[in-house]
Length: 371
Ligand code: FNR
Image (cartoon, rainbow, N blue to C red; front, side):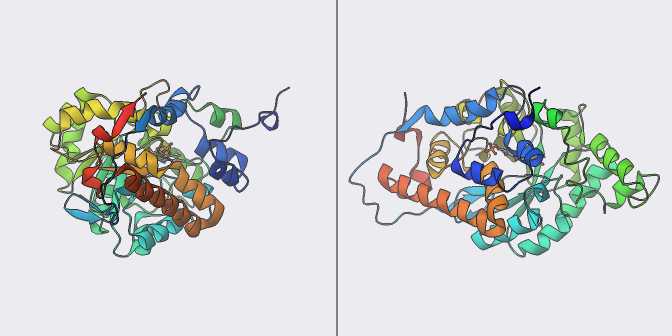
């Protein structure tokens, strides 16, 4: 019989291998693995390697400015922390440690609906650092409303609605491991103290934790979500709303028609629809539709500063870092996260200098060659 131990994991990087040594194996698989055959997960990385940089020379790159602006807010670099739930499976301090790193780096943090800690506790760690809230729309409208209201009350300045998860993708390693961090209670920081959520339970979570966790799993799934439902959420808040998980240019068009404020081109790191288009490959057609009308962000496959450069050159205003942050977190908590981000920023700065650009605005597709 073949057991999990016989299947040698393939590591995408040294960082991933080091994280593997720190995390319980089922949790590592949950983080590192993707949906189905992992074709999309691999495609996300390949898409970046298809583009080469065509540098300019003699451009006086003595001063490199990596700052940029998003929703009238100045960022010291065009990078955010992606919403990643259940971070306690990587490190006991989970999102609290990530928040301290984000604050130290002054990088906006997108807090997941499925965070291990509550958005209030994470906001406390962040102090004045910019934060957005990622919403898994709930099949229970009162819960969606309550989450949005709490985000507003705690200084979150944008709502990111994830739209590529009407149902959960097929994650074969989790099925094999019989592992679900939600069922183990690692992604319930935002629910177990939410008055609207608690009102749906027959017993308090202390009395029946299993039922509470199951209820949370049930209401996170929302296969009925559509553009009409989105209109209702639009009415709940005046905060900017971004849609995360847009890959088709027609959906970008609909997002504009529905007064969405920003788009995140993403395939959830290849964790949802296998064999779907790589994020980077989806970006140019979406940029073509959106032009500069609303910000376009991208995630799924960003592993280095060179990747950030390529995404910006193809039309992204900023990128979100995903798995590499979790690996940094697993390896050395808040310091590990900071080291990962510092490395990526250093690579971006050197790439800009060697490509002959001095500011983020100067990065454009003329500097890329596909081949
Ligand atoms: C995620 N992602 C995610 N996205 C989201 O909208 N809400 C969430 O709660 C989570 N949770 C989550 C957990 C883990 C362990 C991972 C790895 C990812 C997806 C995330 O925001 C982002 O889209 C991907 O991580 C980007 O892909 P890469 O760059 O990590 O490969």
